[in-house]
Every structure is written in C-alpha cells, then in structure tokens.
Length: 188
Image (cartoon, rainbow, N blue to C red; front, side, top):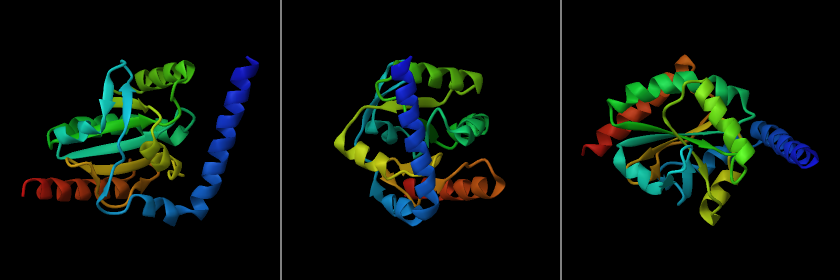
C-alpha cells in the first residue's frame, strides 16, 4: 500500500509538472512533431498482450495516434467520441491507435486502463509502450494530454500535433480536413 501511494504521488507530481509546462511550452511541444518527421521506432503490446510496433502504420493511409493516460479526465471523456470516429474512419482507410502513456510494466495501471476502455466502450487498438531510446525521448516531449498525431503509411508525422481533445467542432473539422489531405497524397 505504501509503495502504491509513493508511485501514485510521483505520477501526480509528473502530471502536475506536465500541465504546468503545457501553457509555457506549447511551441516546443508543437516543434517536436513538425511536418514530415518520422514517428519514432517503438515496440509495445495491446491490451490483449499482442506485440505491436511501428509497422502498424503501413496498413492504413492514415493512423490517428491518440496519447492518453489513466488519470487524464479529458482523455477519458473523449473516448466515446473517438470510438465513434474510429468506426467512421475505417471506411476511409484510417486507423485509430491509442497509446496509454502511464502503463509501462505496471499491471495495476494496465488493469485500470482496461477497465476505463471497457467502461467507455472502446474497441479501437490501445497499446502500452516498451522502453526504448527513440520513443522515450519522443514521449518526454509530450507535455499536453491528450495529444493526437496524424501518421501516414510511411510512418511520417504529418503536421503539428493536436493538443487537447479532438471532440470539439473546430478540432473535429480540422482533423477531418487533414486526414482527407493525407489520403489524397497517399493515392498519388
């Protein structure tokens, strides 16, 4: 119990610092994923224990990568909208991939993530990442959750990340426009 409280306290401190820096370092965060940067190499597992890596991008014209963590209320609140969008996007050759940033090797947090996903009716793929130099460096540059990236079939991050939820009308229109542009370029 004492160890769990210590881990929770550390996670809360990290989240507080991340939120504090988000307002001050928005430009830095956007620069981290500017146009045509490669999404870093990664390995991980989905919630069923299946191995996943960056090869997942090759299967679709666009992969919408949504970064979230179990203590992020906004992340959790947008999940039903993301589930709906994921079903609509499948028809356009667009995949939605959730990456839960706080699981790593913690089974308690993995179980909490599974409960959250089940309670929100989420069926799109969600993964936890293994440690790795490239992906660890990338993840430390993310200061706002949720953060959403559009990745093309070749693993390139297209455009700036969308910081915050994407279920508002303005953000929703913007993401649809960007997805359509990436799909058009994929067909060339």
